[in-house]
Image 1: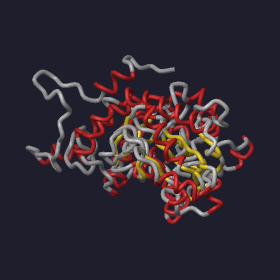
Image 2: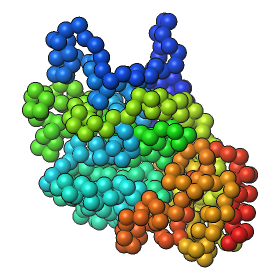
Image 3: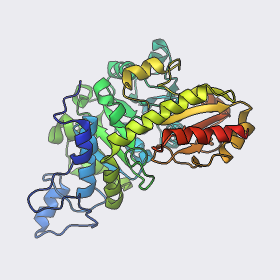
Image 4: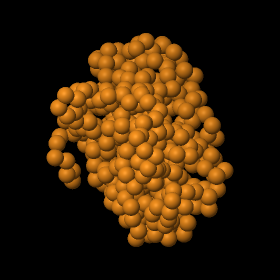
Length: 429
């Protein structure tokens, strides 16, 4: 259950930044790389993490921190940070606790870029990943764990397979093995689902999508629930529970507690060394998007469901996948985790296969062919030919992606106009 003292909509508008007397009403953009100090001793205390403050934007910036605080509040976490992209957020979330010689369990039904990150790029860094189907049996899930497993990863709604993660079940499995569950909550946003309330420990976002909502700003976010007890499994997470010699011997769990250790380590180590910071300007844009998130998601949800129902009844559509559609294989899980709506993303196949799909897409007038997804304008993509192009046929099948799959991201346009656009494009097939 939520322990919010304010409604989610009010947090969307006013969370993260509350101006004082005579201060700017709009969140200021701190477009500065550095801060000035009167003494070296003061700067030294900041470098030693003995005092809170700012000295270099590669690590932290007040604009970014205000937006991260808003997203953290929306997700019900205790600490958060922004990154340069959603991919950076997922990389940091995993690499903060798992590296060379370690192992991760992940759902196979995830975004193609994230699959490649875990299966290939991080493998070259010495980390192994075992992928399991989101609907795998309890025995199959249990068999995926190893003594060196450090985390479980999944997406609330998989992109673009639209499989809904059984968060409670995956969290229980992760916790039974003393590791956290990391959930990418990009498609639902905290308006539709708050994974922490269902047992997730770390939540990530591509803020580029619904949180921004306008295709204007690339970014990512990580939110820590503050609930996972790193100290109870200290041998698994020495980076958090033992002194960090690269940062003057600080022990993150001792200095910052369970509520702040994970994010502080990710900032002090990973952001320091990789530098995948979000620009203050982009953070400002994301904050503008967040102010209308609760209003936009309501229309995305309406359009997504209406489109799924319309496509399911169309004679030229071979199949439709939408978690909120009655009869969908994910419907029961969606009713549990996504009762307010299942976003605006619909996956479907046009009768006639890949060639028919290409004909359909090129004849759309309102919906635009674009790599993007989840913003105010309706857009469409053929994943097997774009975002999941690096995956072989077996990997595509495991991710729930068929050659004819079309991902249609319904924006916030008038519902009837979107349905008419789809009808005229299908008429050309």
